[in-house]
Length: 305
Image (cartoon, rainbow, N blue to C red; front, side, top):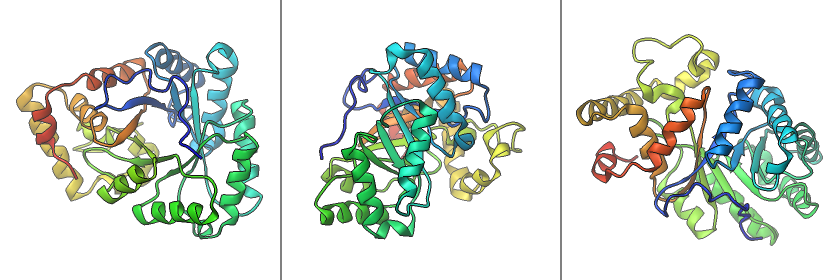
């Protein structure tokens, strides 16, 4: 099964060295209301974004429902946008099909363009979950299979298991990747290159960590306040050092740290798409400037993992 490449998904690519932008919908119904979410999707579509990424876990289905309601109000865009969603374990027989059916109902769609397994589970050592996924692909309920938050070993195991089955393939992997924290490795990139797996990354600003606004204390109403577990991911000595380097370079060059962090994320070798989250329309405009950022010396100075 070849990698599913949706029509129009390359519409915002500037050249081969930068990533496609996608809209991450994690804030919908949790940090912003339905009306604001609709405005963000309207603006994203107008700017050329054609990939909308949600998950069953986002707001316990609220994000999927909001995306589905927007699609229902804008039927003319259905053939030109790609909808990705994710399902959580359990991946036991029957459970995947039930989860996919629930997501389809909330999205108001007959098929999911990209379905991600939201995280690894030991059940995936068995062939049964994969056979159920492949059956859903055969039925048109799912067009492409993706993995999210898998490490290198887990990705390699999944790829090999599907080869052993002799049918189907992984088309996408979606992991965290920014200047402070990265879940991508060179070995993972090599596996993806060898198996035609497209890399999608999220959280280019580290849930706001890379803005520097949390240096003294966690800001009220922020992602770190709403989801305290994220603090353990970012408030580490290594991440703080990388944040300080970003702030120093921003100070010396006159570029705001958000632009530099977004530019770094969208210019990473081997990354196909970067998901951008937002609460306001203004948050959606800066990534387009980042795509056009051309100072390679600054990007090199920011460094790599």
